[in-house]
Image 1 (cartoon, rainbow, N blue to C red):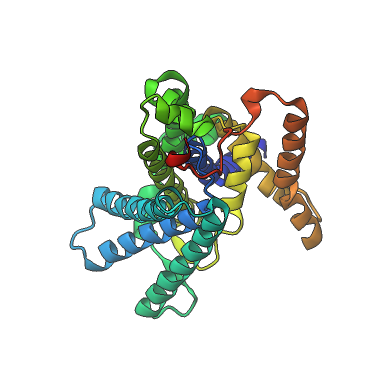
Image 2 (image 1 turned 135 degrees about the horizontal axis):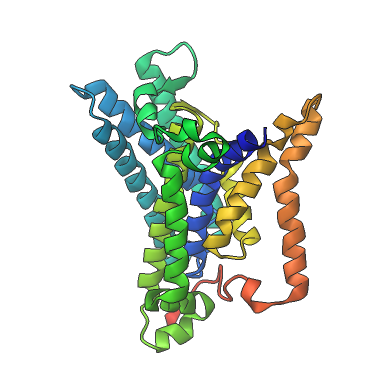
Length: 325
């Protein structure tokens, strides 16, 4: 039972890890991107469109192309969302909160539009698209994992996108704490005027961090569709995972390495109700609130402590006007 719970918690947490890692990288530049749920949604539908076009128009099925094309489409679509956000908030200096929320609404609308269009193309009796062949390529795991008992089930039974999420979080953590690029990026997030005076190109770092963060977050949407949902796209199927990813950023105190363990915890809390017998629907919904409650409690605790190393970047959410420097 416990091995199965942990395994499912990891699967549930991987989209959150992608989203939180991308958002941490974005926020370290001083950009507060509340459009992460919409970006993950667009990343998912981008991968679905790529997979659908490949399955419908390809000759012999190539597993490499079946993975590469959806990933490329997902990354491009997520990048475009990041560019839209940067153009509005960095170049035009629009309000970051409003822009992020508008981007989430826009992303969900785009995903539902193209998802509904694909359903009409295939003439499905149910409002969903099934991409079994592509999903099987994404969900492929090590062949000997089942022979290693609970160890194989917990650590080796996952797909390459799950391991890529962990590797990405570790790389981002190292870049932020151990490299000159990370030092410059953190300087931009803390005090862009001082960074600008030191010769650091503020707009360049904000654009780069936000766009790369958007690409990472978009892969979380792709993982959800191809791995967690077994290649089935349904409009409004993501639930509140995008917002959970943003909550995880606070819980992880803006550290991608901590978000690795936080994503598993949040994933486990999100599904723990399935392992409690005789729990009614109201009880299930209450249990789904636990990750948010944990985040609120943790936020209050860190705020009362006033430790600088667990606080967000000082210039987070604030537009930078160079002429006022």
